[in-house]
Length: 74
Image (cartoon, rainbow, N blue to C red; front, side):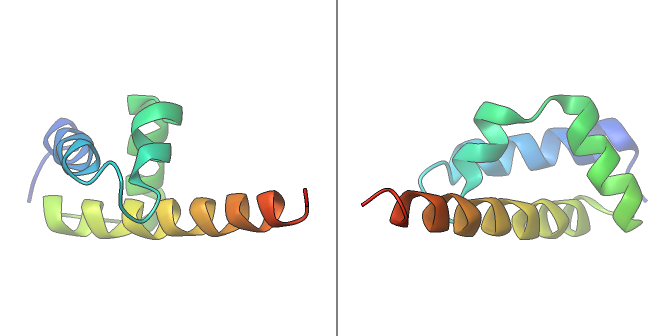
């Protein structure tokens, strides 16, 4: 089982490596470490891979919502 710092660091590294994919830029630009940790804890993730999966869901949802908002601007 990874500790919280390891899981947060894994999420941040993954987000930076995939910045232009699936809304990961939102995680890089808008999330503090404490917010990432809160999402991980809330979901009950126990490993780095699970933590990345949790934040991937968050990133995709934020991207979809942003896309919806931008679509109404035209």
